[in-house]
Image (cartoon, rainbow, N blue to C red; front, side, top):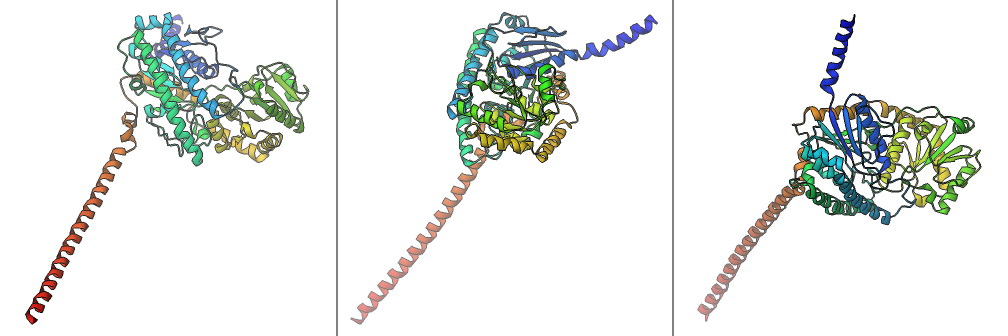
Amino acid sequence: MNINALYFAVLFLIPYNVTALNILGIFPYHGKSHFIVFKVYLEELAKRGHNVTVISHFPQATPQERYHDISLSGTLKSIENNLPFRKSYITVLQMGLELTTSGKDNCEVLLANKAVQNIVKEKQKFDVMVMEQFNSDCALGIAYKLQVPVVGISSHVLMPWHYNRLGVPSNPSFVSFHFTDGGTRPTLKQKLERFVLDIYFKTIYYYISQRHNQQTLAKYYDDIPPLEDLARDIKFSLLYHNFILTGSRLFPANVIEVGGFHVKEAKPLTGDLLKFVEEAEHGVIYISFGSVVKSSTMPEDKLKAILESMAEMPQRFIWKWEDQTLLMDKNKLYSSTWLPQVDILGHPKILAFLSHAGMGSTTEALYFGVPIVAMPVSGDQPSNAAAIEESGLGIQLQIEDLTKENLIAAFKTVLDSKFRDKVKLLSKAWHDRPMSPMDTAIYWTEYAARYSNLTFRTAAADLPFYEYHNLDVIAICVVLLLSIGYSFKLIIFKLCCSKMKKDKNVSEHVRKSKISKRTKRE
């Protein structure tokens, strides 16, 4: 009996030992809302038997088997509840500068860490490296030193500087832009905004963040190739997209949509929150502007518009509010500095969601089929809000248009039974996949490790700008057309000259003939 038990134990362990990978995760950005998404994926890799070493600002509170933290915590202040509730061109431009300067800081902190230095110095063996694709390519230098294949992962839509390296079309006529409104149907004004802002963001990224990252890497290692070249060698890019929400995109085969893997099943509500929700005769509307936008900085007139809307609506409200101010009667409004958002959205009495349209919150609402009134503030939120409206998940209401009347009208729209039925159908389609988003993300991570010597990028990623946009062909065609036009003009000119010369000769001959005849008569 003991022999049989040992036999089966060995059989059980063999595939585990064969398939377990050593995975390095590098997440140097200090934004908590991003890591909330990545953490679920990294922990699942460890649960499935892989040894995962994670460099981040957010180490686990409770250690997990096969999950090893290298903590950057305390080196930079976590980005949480620090963005004001306003939207303008100035905030967009400031966002660009903040992204690039934080990219510099993230790289410096990452490379200065002694444990990170030891990984490179000791040439520790990893089968694959997973890194956040956001505001810094610094981690690619570490991957190069370790000679490990790279999988990029994001928690949002593509940044402007990621399109070229992945060979993804970024035509402003139909491709949403990270920081602006308009979605896939922009107006002429919005196209012009995208064109200008695309140049702005790419320029400051390449000349501030990426160039500084290259220089910082050079202080530690003298053989790092250009980071943009290394970026084109990323095996797979896991995007936190799903076409049900963001629409069909022209992605190459190595760009994989995995939107939704961070959402877990809702747990039952408890205590006063459960009582508040269960006793809501007309249901509940949930309000949250995420972990980055500080809703308590809302201008007084906008706050008044929301509170007056609440007073006129029969529903109860739950609001993530960052201070202890009593905004309204507790029988009408439940507010707290922290709320179990997934558990709230998963409750059947939650009828609608007033949101900043962050990708995490939007994905959670879609998961549970809760319609959204999207009020974007910054970052990818304008792009997400446009996708929310275009997909049918909800409607947009811009900050500048926030009035009591407009907000009540928006709530009534998404609370309509037909609208809610469409959102439930959308949610059903979102869930209906051949493979779950988590399984998809892990499969392609493991695939990159299994075939580390193969290249999966599209040829478009290697083309220079003028070839990608066929400018060389267009130039030749223009030259040919001009040459043909010039030749045709030259032929016409010569024919005309020949005819004029012939006519002149005939005229001269006639003139001489007349003179000759006149002379003879005389």
